[in-house]
Image (cartoon, rainbow, N blue to C red; front, side):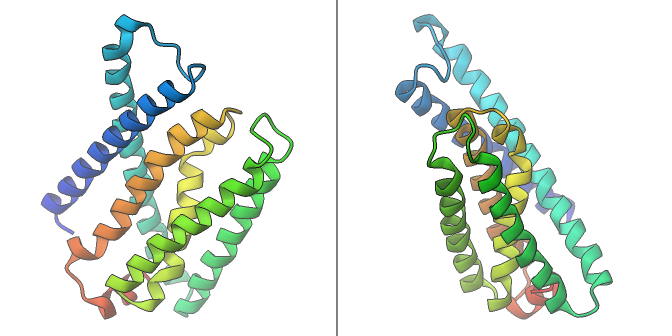
Length: 203
């Protein structure tokens, strides 16, 4: 990973965040007027503000991505056997999903959110993990699943505290898509074959 590749990944990640947030924000305003009250002459300003907030979310997702890579590097030096680190990631992911259900139960969010949101996260993260495995190695599934669920949820923590489903989706969706882009680009930017990828991520 040289500076040119890092800048490319960073730039495309924040652009992805800006685009997804803007599109999602416009759709939410049209579907839910209470999400953001926009006058007829204020659309341009609000679209610009949505794009800027999306760029910030993309940058935040990028920070989370490199935080995970740093954690992964440190953990592989602590856990002498790779399967222990992989098992730990699986355990933490399950814990996070249960924690989501507990925290969302009996809150201002719609009643079905406490079970529907974890279910959607699991399904989407599993799809990302499947594509990651298809392009790298079988051992990449759990680390990818951990990253897509645990790291994304941590990054979107303010949205979970908002009490508004629209605000949560507005924050969670671009973070998830940015993280999907980053995890799927990692092995391509490093230019490593599947077996080296397995060693790199303790997969």
